[in-house]
Length: 588
Image (cartoon, rainbow, N blue to C red; front, side, top):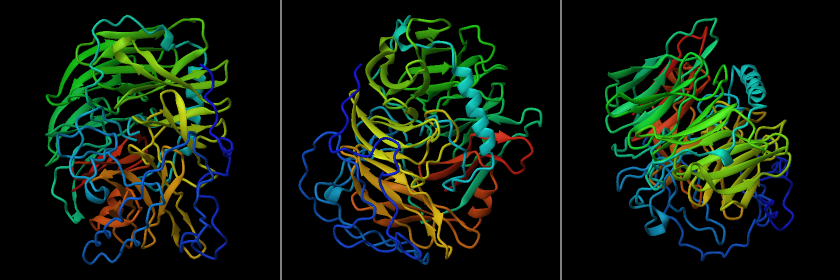
């Protein structure tokens, strides 16, 4: 397909440092400390709308933010009014909860002043990586951006790139499907779900699960995957999948699934079903009934490759797809009907599936080696994986991550920089984009898969980015969350935490953005909500006094998941020679 026209207004080129939130005016300490005079917004994004938009009338002002938890002592900043034409938050696209129970990645229909009242009808669910995060990003702690294994991840990414060069995996050759999955069915993934528990002002430690020991010869083992049912928290672990009672943490069931070091898993689920990759060479996949703890079916991956590592797997509706360096295959999740198969040969074009993202829609990222280009496709599993539309990334840019599949929002990068731009895509056309500039934002991921980013949040009309938490000369933490319209890429607001906290976005709660303010050795951490129209911060819940020690001692390759009023710290990778690693830590 031809390249979509560039947005009008001569926006900064892709990957330039002239993106949103440019360097603030020269100040001795905190560049975010006070608002600029009218007409001089140091945070304003210079990006221009990709397509002209009709501005909506100005909504009424929001009510004042909720008071902080008693005795906590960290009040949020005063509400900021949205700019003209920027309305209150609209329902997002996320995991599907029961009626009336909003989920992570999801905003219910707005009531008075834009505040939600009830959840939208069921539809596909999608979390921002949620899903498999984009690999190529260093694993980091929950919102800290720290990594003790950056060298290993960089090497792994290079090896992965070498492995995928060559063989052909082609969406154009998908076929062989008979029965089709229901493309309208909803999906609930690992990064969220309904919130039904009573709101507590302080979250206390409930239970955790020690990680298994990894032999020195193995270096590391992946344990990607956390899913939820109405009774169980299910964790993919080393050599097994285990279901735990969500309330007590008692082990309810175990499914053996011995595998190699780098086997992957789907990040989403559908009607209490999901799938994992396993086997000594990661050459098998297994569909699992999460509600009963039983294996639904197993299959050996087709092809003659000696290993199926560095694969990516996604679930969307009643379909599961897996792609690796030399092939791809899709199955109906419920009964193993083959939906497509590709690879192990040259079909005539130079593109192969390099990554999958699931949830609300099934999105495939194609790497076209010889054309030096990447493509994004929304595919229809019910039609043998045929693309509904295709978007061609600009030359020289790669698609590094898919942070939402409905709406489709991706992160772009270059050979030297993993993330340079956020791009919103509609029907195969570029709707808007935001330049990430140089060291302005922190993108938290757990690897190099396209569904591995956790803190770039997307609802129906807004993308939320976490500012890179630098420390000033006087020791103050300079952090925050910035909101941008998907329609035109323009900045809506920047929220700055109080109390010298480092903040990162982790999800949605009651129609508001949910932020995590990391605990420190001398003060408790907390969860905060940010008003989607103004960015005003309110305390949602504080964390127990032991949170710093418990959360910081788990290990580097972990990420936070908020589900049903419970905060989970989940592992993605377990390393040899590191003590105190956990599969799960829970606060509620």
